[in-house]
Amino acid sequence: MEARLLRERVPTFGEYPFSLPVLQNFQRLELHPAVTFLVGENGSGKSTLLEAVATAWGFNPEGGGKNFRFSTRTSHSVLHEYLRLSKTFRRPKDGFFLRAESFFNVATEIERLDEGPGGPPIIDSYGGQSLHEQSHGESFFSLMTHRFRGDGFYVLDEPEAALSPARQLAMLRRLHELVRQRSQFIIATHSPLLLSYPDAWIYQITDQGLERVRYEDTEHYELTRGFLNNPQSYLRNLLD
Image (cartoon, rainbow, N blue to C red; front, top):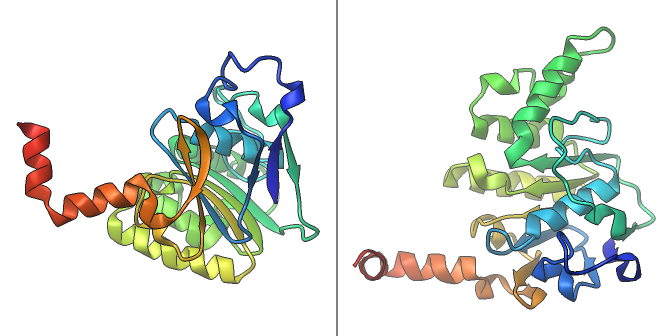
């Protein structure tokens, strides 16, 4: 799959979201058949680009599956209207858009829908326990363990936000299980642990735009390695 920007339709590159550096020279984003990562500094535009891909695919901008249509606050950009997704011949049977910042709203919507008549409770697909009655990290992990069924297209925005390092490693294991079940992921992350997934494509967002890089060349890896190798030196420079 790839996402292509219809540059000829963009009214101006001087206004948000098209003023973001990532979009100034952006042509297309080709996705790895299994796992693609987007990395970059806060405000670089990775979440905006990820959200646009998810919305263009048909997911609710605030998160959830394609059947979620709630809106608590319209804050997504118009970028999805200028993206064209070229899809493979194989159509995923499952899918989900996880936004760490609005997952609370997804959990609330599940409870609202389950108050209505008809059909089995939706929460049964998420492990059977209210997501609001779990910690943030537990609810994220329940989502990946129970709701993600494989043969799907999953868009994850900073899924590590509520996960301990041990849980991030457990997420890697679950991610690999789902990849082996013919799933495809695109993930925006700051986690050097998640970025270590073998053979994934990593796109780094810089002031010059989007560049595919090796794991070892990401700032996340270099900074984390440097700090762990000599934390005293890093802290001395930071705190003096």
